[in-house]
Amino acid sequence: WNNSVTAVKDLPMPADENIVYNFHCYEPLIFTHQGAGWVDTMPADYRMSFDNDMSVFMDKTKEYLPDNVIMLEPAKDIAHALDSEFFEKLFAEAITVAEERNVPLYCGEYGVINLASPEDTLKWYQSIHAVFEKYGIGRAAWSYKEMDFGLIDEHMDPVREDVIREL
Image 1 (cartoon, helix red, strand yellow):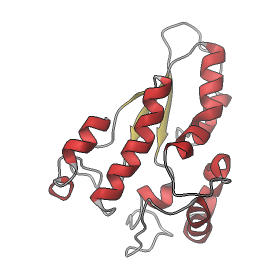
Image 2 (cartoon, helix red, strand yellow):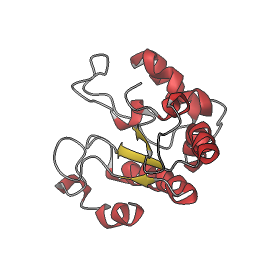
Image 3 (tube, helix red, strand yellow):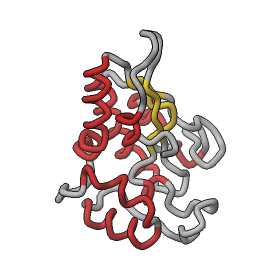
């Protein structure tokens, strides 16, 4: 499942106490990978705002990334613009499993493509960060420079300091 948070439940009980459950998070992929040239079914000129409600994310995911619809299922009932509730619902099962097994969670990759507006990127980071903080989830943003997800790249100038506070 490409280190999906939904696959945490399928991981075995760790053999010792020095293990963490790692996952990656780029959800909703239709937002974080908008216009991504390496996603075969994604139009290069596709852009969207983070301020849409879940129905828009579901519809556009069905249209362009049908195999990814399953990732949005935990949050399909959100009827307002996405915010931290989306990540709460997305991570809920993994958080429960990790707590039951006393295993820390770590998000080893997360981020937004540089084709999204800096303002929307900030909203996404604020939303995911609130859940990371609430549940003590460790994390590493991908990637801090270049490679389409850069935080120090010029396009992030208007919001960089705000994003960094969220990391």
